[in-house]
Structures are given as structure tokens and as C-alpha cells.
Image (cartoon, rainbow, N blue to C red; front, side):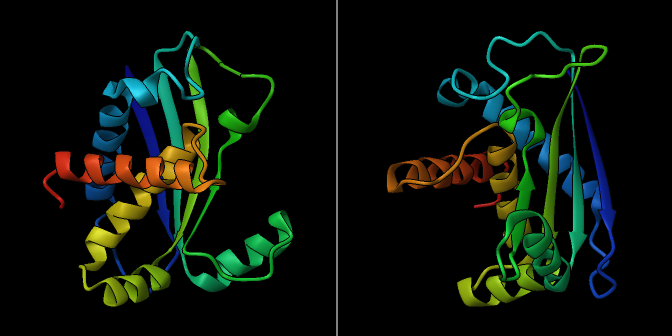
Length: 165
């Protein structure tokens, strides 16, 4: 299986190592797909494909506030917004064996703020949000406490597998 991840950083105050975080995202996705409780219940179940693609946009909280207002009818800045195009669609569109899961938008200024609050490195917090966004792209949400606990537990396992925790 091939994984294509496109990344763009429009946040001028943190020149993140995009290649590193693309590799982190690929490892997290592969880890998730090896977990039966994820693989058997995600949006990829029953699909025939050879490539998965998705995008990351790194920006600031002013941009996520704007996106929240425009597309989600929510009037606040977010640390992460996920548009899970494939998971949220009734018609699973696969072109030439490629599935485009969607886009993850992360506010890097919020990442720094949360890192300070949690007493972790900004890089760890960014990896945590990347893992969270990928869970959403795969169709997992956290509308209930049970779902929330599942998502967070899976994120922690993924980060442990990378040696991040």
C-alpha cells in the first residue's frame, strides 16, 4: 500500500520539519491499520485500493476560527479541524485505486499553547494532534465518552509505538 501525504505550512512563526511529520503520520496510519479494532471498523473496511492520500495544512488559530465559522457554523478557533471526506461520504469514491481520506488542519500557535499547558514538547503535541486527525480521517469520532476514550487510547498506543510517549 502506498501512502501519499501532502503538507503545507502557512504559519510563519514555526518552521516545522514537514518531512519528519509526514513520516510520523505514515507510521501512525500504518500502526492504526494493523490494529484489528481500528482496521475492522474504519471507513476503509471492504474497500479495494492500493493508495491512501490525505493532506495537512498547518496554520494559526485565526485561520481555524475562520474555517470553523465558514464551514462548521462554530465561532471559535480550534487546534485541529478534520475534513474526513472519504469517511463522511455515503458514496465511497476511489479513483485509480486511490482513496483520498481528506484534510487535517492544525493551528500551530494552539499546539504551542497546549504543549505548555500539558508540559510536553510542541513536537509531541503536534504528533498527538496528527494521530488524532488520522483517527478522524479513518471515520472515528468522539461524540460519547466511550468513543473519546477509545480514540485517545489508540492515539497513545500509536505514539508509544513510535517511542513518542
